[in-house]
Length: 310
Image (tube, rainbow, N blue to C red; front, top):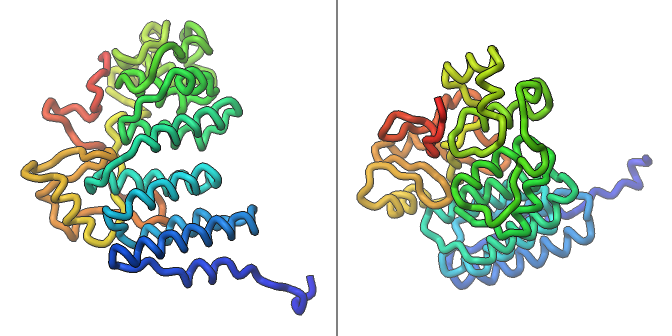
């Protein structure tokens, strides 16, 4: 391409110039202007990551509680129309839930809509993150969404479905066994080995034949006996590094020394502020050197379902 004829897209600069004010009323006006511009730019450059870039930019500011009723639906619309920013939106929702912001019924509608749109096409990324949203915010999926998500051919999705089922976050019929039937030890050597193994070591994950399959296979039986699991049901989210997030989480914690707050974010009051871990969107979600291995329950278990069948 001739360098003289090259015109770089201007949208990064357009978004970078947008600001969110600190005062409540000015911030509300800025949010309307910000998302209106983002939606316009996304339509002009549909192949660019405009929505993801814009959502990350809003995560640098604390949205006032009085403006949450505007920010939340904008986030959901952006994620519905641009699923490449779904993970960022979910992290934002979970952080504000932990900070005590109200989570509206529209988030359940959003979750069911995402399942109904993406599950029939085996869109694993969208389904996994939506199921994680349901787990994080204790959203109970309706019957149609339950039936659709049980048919997704992916072990990670299936494990999330079984976990949600064990927590009464699914409705009506729609079981993993309806799709794959009764399993045996041969399935531990196939593509669904993790699903079969995890279901085989947990009391509340109902998958016919899974427990017997693990007991028969000598290799997986050793893993079971060593209390090895590849799917951590006690995993929590990491709060975003928002202004005043420390104060907001401590207010939600109240007099408790530690708790899993709404949004499935674990907070411990004894941890010094400078040692608390927060995430900035755009960085990796988690790191190899963090060394997190789950937080222990009072009974010493790392699994919050406490449903291992050892």
